[in-house]
Length: 68
Image (cartoon, rainbow, N blue to C red; front, top):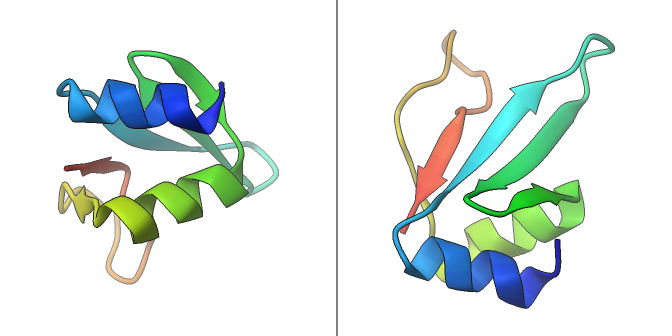
C-alpha cells in the first residue's frame, strides 16, 4: 500500500494494526487498506502522531493498534 493511501485511510477513521508473525517479526496493516512496511509504519506513527490503543498483550510489548 502506498504511504499516501495509508494516510488517507487513517484520516478517514481507519487504524494501523501490528500482527506478530510466527518468526517474531511484526507485520503492519492499515485498516481499511492493506499491508504496509515496518518503515512506513514507523513514519506514520512519528509524522502523524498516532496514538496507541493501549492494547499490548504484555507490558513492554509493542501495542497492536494506533489511531489518529
